[in-house]
Image (cartoon, rainbow, N blue to C red; front, side, top):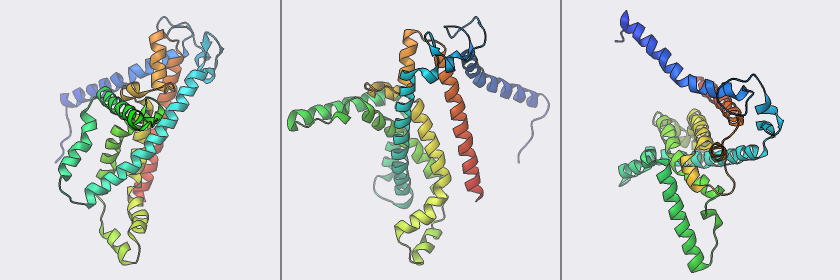
Length: 284
């Protein structure tokens, strides 16, 4: 039986919730505020309001919409995130189906292995993938004269590295949904003459659609903002997180605040759209 908080406990709880929300929102609000500061430095004092860091067309106040290197890095991040999302969803759905529908020796050990990327630091994971892929590429080139450039640091290796750990998170999301599925509906479709593939796409997949949408959103956002693993695997085409890191090391202008504000707003819109879509599908 649930009990309501009363008296001092309720007051303490309210103060805690307000303080927690302020703790989360205050740094983000400061970042967004300084995106409009008419200064060459993202710090106090406040020099006045300006939109130059968004629409400025001349140095030193070149806005994000006219900063070609940053725009290119956003495009690279978006391409990586789309590919990672597609591959992660395919692998995650197969993983979830394997764990729910089949029993085989070593199943529990395989499940533990699936969870390992969650506890391995991103930098360590990136270094491990880099070392393994480089040795493989060197061996193929030395013994077979095969030059597989996609095993070298660059776009392809970043996708592989991100898929390695994002697939784990997507699998857990889809697995939680699939365990609630009543497989008697699939058996009914099979009894009515449907093949296993037809039953999967017409019965199981619609049931999984809210989880698939949620996993896709999580995969895209995690890929877009990933830094640790990407830093170890990046090549000449740097995604946004690496480009922002390079700018910060050189001493950047508040254009990075403008980029951060746009990313926060975009993430909020995507998350809200995902929640509305998942809520609508769950009601259906």
